[in-house]
Image (tube, rainbow, N blue to C red; front, side, top):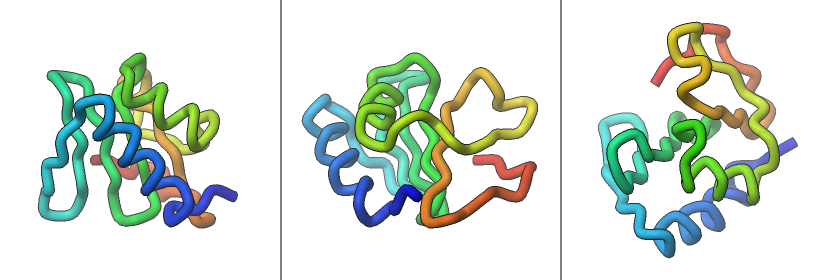
Length: 94
């Protein structure tokens, strides 16, 4: 099982070193580098990244292969990781 407390500090450090900047949103944190090149930390248990970006590769290198799901509309656009035993609601959206 992936634990957010273990992986988030490592991912954040790697994202910041790669030039990503933090944008604090109401219920989530977004690390932004360019249009369609973002990583989100949502509700402390879900992490998403735009597919095929440097951010997604950083997340994959540290957290392993994506194990989460997205809505039908988001499939193919985001890689998702569920942590701390979270299994999703089946329709979770950012």
